[in-house]
Length: 554
Image (tube, rainbow, N blue to C red; front, side, top):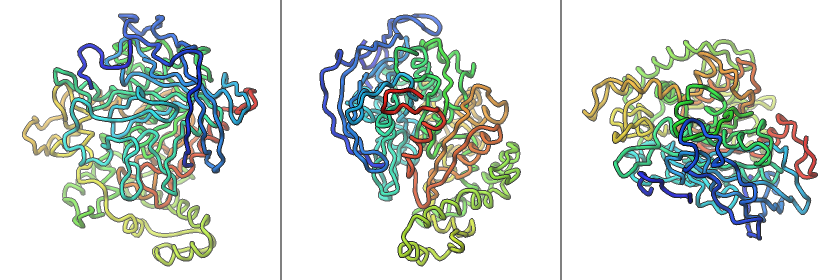
């Protein structure tokens, strides 16, 4: 079946790129089909990867150090990854396999696999129109948009849309480096000799002809798990080491990347995967890359107010301080329940000491790295303009209060995620059937201003939240099949979310003994990625892969 709406569904480092198509073994196309197994997880012929259905492309990729590389690769386009798709346009993936780099043959048989999702704002993501690696992941809102989607900065409809501050408002591969140039991890990975898988996924705005929302939670994570299962099911047919799958994503895509890593092989998703005919294989991944993850949604409002409650909005006005204080109290209770210990031997993290922890563990080191990298003249100029920073002995020091003043206006209203008027993208994420948006916290429901709700959280919400949050898989009952390697990044000026969200994720993984690399980018905003080359090298290090260009496998 070709890519399109299935029955019952309404139609719905900087990179320089020059691509030329040459004659491949066969035309690219879909090797998946909705005519596969009609019951249970499918291991039928419908999910067998056709290794001959590719186009051969040649592209020039500029790596993180500014060097150009000519890369010849096989491009497998829009392969349906489930046997019973709801919408093939979104439930399909692209595979890119390097063949030659700078004229030298590459054997990617045992290469790591970068699993790069392009989800932004929990919107639908499709690779169907991609013309090469890193070109997929377009997001949109066919069939209807979110209620007042512009109220939520995480609800962008474009994978590469940027704000005036140079921030990428969506997720997936829409990243910017410190110079404001776009960053494409799939291209960097391909130039390093890795196999790249780019999956599409359903999203919250998709609506069928009956007016039913078919991409709301937990559709996106179910689809990404099914895509991982497809890759693992086709071990030996899809080149690459399926035991070295590394996910990446930004914003909502970063949240889903985190969730993939935390929830590997959890039986909680089995019935959802069965319903779409996912392959009979593992959905565990080896490592997680997450940039500014918009996650832990049921606690996000409290975390946001703890972090940004004292900051005014762009209009200069503060949010309702009664609401802000009540949400901060909820965060304090939640944080205490986690019993997390900070990195660096900090001790138990609480609402009372989290500001000190963030400053010492992340913010001052981030400012120090930034200032150290400047020339003496530029550093003196920056410090003269930012007198809240004390520079002594080659290290930056400042207070939490001064840092908040430095960042300035907060991005979101209060509550930021479960809005009283159901206006956020996250409200839409928890819609159901023909209901576009619903409350997912008791506080939001109790203070509903729409008059459309019963002031109670719907009975199905707790189970759905459980499927969308990585934290319970790391804290309440640690998942033995989770990833053991975490790369987490956030811009210090990112007020799309609370700094505690990624810090809690890192602390939870670290407490379990996992390998955690968690840094903040100084003065960068939402969607920042200032060290993409380091991430590519990190993958090589944790995977033990050495054969990027010689054809040998590590």
